[in-house]
Image (tube, rainbow, N blue to C red):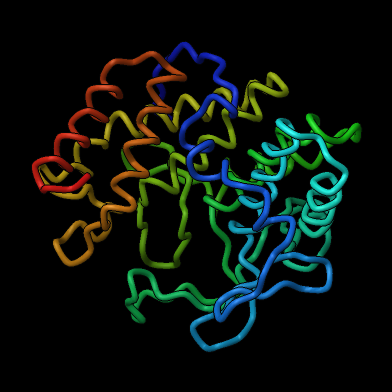
Length: 293
């Protein structure tokens, strides 16, 4: 497995723009949720979303992100209301409602079909799993000690393992390690934001526990980004969403380009490697060249 020996720095989640800007919003919408045409809440207050076929379904990534936001809110304002909301979401993730064990490891399933890039020929057939969701759940678990006294180490170690092995953890033909957002039978998508988000799970778990395996695979995953990052760049335009569909009609929109910028800021922060900062600056210049802000 290809790997460079980066010197990993400690950057708390509350100092990470990727999380504070995406998740650091007001508590009002989380603690007093309101349903709409595309959003519904079950009896425990856990969010559901309307699927393409009109059915209400659970999205494990969305649930994990809301729970992570609740942790960050509690770190700032430790109220009983936030505590109870987080307790419900953590309890949901630990239940069997969307979780399935495979070889003793917990996988969180999307129990609905999803066409990659709206292409029905590349359908993710439910139930399917995602390295992105697994990584976000690990980010969450790594911070639960800031709220609860319970020890979540066993749960976290098992979720971590799901990122190291198939189907979420993959080694390509050149020996580079990937976290696969969309494990598909025939398509190896190599989605950039999903891979880096998964690495965040390994990073925060390593910071929390000192787990050597998490550090080993984190460094390998960062090495993969360094090796392939130029293939995602489209000078003067939005960066590519993935490498499997790097054609004009499949380029990421500016939402994901901005996400990439925040992720490369994070990579520079945790490694100090100027090549990540320089690449982030190139992405910023590409936005300016295209007239985007």
